Structures are given as C-alpha cells and as structure tokens.
Image (tube, rainbow over all chains, first blue to last red; front, side, top):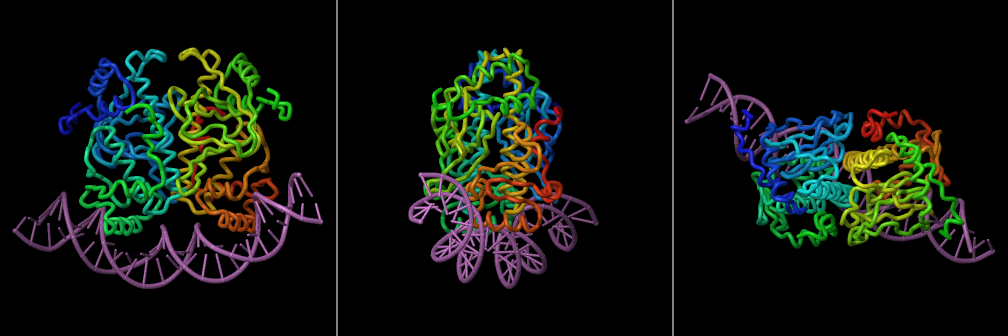
Length: 245
Length: 245
DNA sequence: CGGGGAATTGAGGCTTCTCAAGCTTAGTGG
DNA sequence: CCACTAAGCTTGAGAAGCCTCAATTCCCCG
C-alpha cells in the first residue's frame, strides 16, 4: 500500500451507499474497513478491469469515477455506465467468467476486493446489499437504453445528470444541486451517443434556458424539477429501491 | 392448466438453452419437466410481468417471444430486450423487489415458475445455469446500449439480427440462416431506437444489397459473414460464454 | 368480400454529424 | 516569468441521416 500515501483511502462513501440500499450489521460494515486495507490505487485513464480478462474476485469502488466502455473495431466508443463510489464490479459474474467490458478510471480511483462469503451465510447483510446493488445497476442499464433509444440530446443530458445527481446523493457524496463532474464533453458524448460538438451546443442551450450550468468541472442543476418534468422518465433508484428510504 | 390444451407445453428449447450454458445433472433437467406442469399460457400483447409489480418468483420462458419494455410519459416506447425460450425473468431480483420493466408477450407464450433451491444447494447445476443465463442477459443489454449509442440504422438491424440468430441457435430453435421473426417493423423500430418508416427503408436497402431478406414473418440472413464484418462488434454469446462450446 | 393492421411510398424538415478552424486553459520547460 | 504545448472547449458552415406527416397499397383474417 505504498501508493496510498498519496490518496486517503476512505470507505465512507461506499459504506453509506451500501447501507442506504440494505440493512447491514455493524460487523458487516467493519468488514469493509478490513477489505480497504487491501485497496489498490488506479491512475486516471488506466483500466481497472480489462475486457475479456478472467474475473478473479468482485471489486468494490471506494473512491473516484470510472466508466465501463465498449469499443467497436473502427474506434467508435460507447460508455456503458459510470462506476461511482460504493459500486461493485464483477459481482454477478465472478465464477469462471470473463469481464464483459473494460472498466477505465476517469479520475484517480481506489478499489478494493469486495468482502465475500460462503453462499447462504449472510448474517451481516452484505450479500443482500450486493444483490440490491446489482438490481440498481441493471436499472441504470435499462435507463441508459431508454435514453439512447428514445430521447433527444437535451433529454439525454438532463436524464443523465439527474441520474448522476441521485447516485451521488445515495453515496452521500453531495447534498445540494451542485457537484463535481470530472468528465470531458467528449466522454459525455460517448456516454450519450452523441458527438462532443453537439454536446457542447446542447449544454450552451441548457445554460441559456436556465436548466443546467456546467463549467470548470462543476455541474449545477439550476432547475431540477423542470428537468425532471422534461424527461418523462421515472428515477431508476426509485424503481429499484421502492421500499427503502 | 386448461388453456394449455391449445398450446403444446414443451420444455425442449428451454432445456437445451440451459444445458448449453452450464452443465446440468439429469435430475436437474427433470425438475424442468415438473416445473412445466405449472406452466401458464400468455396471449399475444398480454403482459407477463407488470412494471412495478412485486416479483413473486422467477419465471422461465418455455416457448414464444416476449419483450421487456419501458414507456415514457408521452408514449414513446423502448424495447429493452427480447425474451426467448429458455430465458429467465426476474431471477436476479426476486427478493423483495419490484419489476424494473414490463414484459409483454409478442406471440402466444408459455412460462412456468423456475425451479428454485435453497442457496448453496446446487448439486444439479441449475443455479449455475441461472447465473450463466444472467451474465448472458447482461451481455445482451450491453450490446443493446452499444447498438443504440454508436451504430447507424443499417448496423443496428444487422447486429440485432445476428444476435437473435445466435440466441435462437443456442436454444436449438433453428439451425440454418433462416428463421421465423414474429415481429412487426414497428416493434423493431422500438427496439432499435428508430421509426418504423426508417426501419422499412433500411430493410429494403438491405434486401437490395443482398444482406437480409425479411418477408412474411421469415428472416433470412443472406450473407452473415458480410453482416458480421460490417458490424464491428463481437458476439455477445462469445463474450459471456468464453469457455463452453 | 370487407375490415384492419401492417407495410410501403413520397415530400419536406429538423436534429445531429462532419470537418475544420480558432480559442481558452493548465501544465511544462527554458 | 514567459513562451510553448496539448488537451479541451467553442464556433461556423454544410451535409447526411433520420423523422414527421400523410397517403396508398398489401395482406391476413373473419
């Protein structure tokens, strides 16, 4: 753990996220601290998981931003989903499986092996949290499909921003309507199925409209309720976590 | 099971699919026959699962075609994925969860409760098959995202057709390059993020090009290898099942 | 034979892309 | 401290792909 001298390894956000989506015993939360002892630091633009690589063990994102991507043979790139603190990587597919997509760090990131258990032994609630996390992940994938298939540029950006905001809130990373968005317009374009030029123009239109301000790596939702009204879609989190919270 | 008089309840395709993706003991396959005793017939256009409904138990698709869909408030519809014989519904999310999307029968369909087990008790290999099926499902979702985000109409249709062909082969429903496609151009449009008008024109172009023939509910891949070359994407099945077959 | 959903066709328009250039900003080395 | 660089952002102009609307034809089914 020499590298961690540079980066404070904190399990706070991961802990809050998992505790938000399932009831976890104090001992379960403590296991996260132990897992964090084996944390690994990943530099920006470095891959955390290589597509096609055999998955050794599920990973837990402790801090930073990453994205899952697929690249077509001619270089076109699609960001499949974002990976934020508290998210699991390769949990559903860790038996004899290979990774379905690359996971690349956007910012400097910290991951650790996710605490695992013998099947059926979930007295601590962590397995339940993992399962709930998986359902949430699927919900985000379905939202992504709907965004790409049936929304225009303005709606895609709005919907995406709302989702990110919601996910950051769930991990207690932010509270207000403003947050750090360490993402280039190019990456946004790859996530939203657009070109960076068009993302740029649409962002300008949104600022003019008083919907969204995005500058210097900070995003501010200027009118979240109007944004939600524009995007006729239901929150992924509310879909997947209908009982809790 | 009075309705089943009209439809022959066969577990063949489901059995083949599950056996193709994991090693299942003979007793495990026999459990499918028992589960099929409690099969339910669903008429075309009827919902098999309602979005937001609490999931009682995982279901297994025995025969027919269905699709998972989400609908925006203004009526725009997105087909998230197809559900073919041997596919599982609600397996990953059957603990206290609600359905993330509606599942609607396209043709007359037969579903039955998927045989379940106490956790950790998978001597028959069915749980492994379910897990592998889940990984495949995720792979199809990722392929769908890439299709919608980064492919044009011609590529989307090609990629989609190749995927369907592959899935039907996996369940031993077809063998050659020709298969029944009980899907309107409208539904194709909703699956591919296009309009039915544009799907129509693109299909005509593909027929002219000698790529694909689609008429009277039958699709024929006229030049699968050229289609694969055009679509610079890797087969989802090969991604998710790298060891087997 | 009639009805109705699905497929097809046409014309025009809008969203998004492409290409290309200029600008801004932060980091780097002299 | 200041060019210098590189990456990201911004702008413009033109083109392409896809959509909308609307009308017509086809085909299956009763």
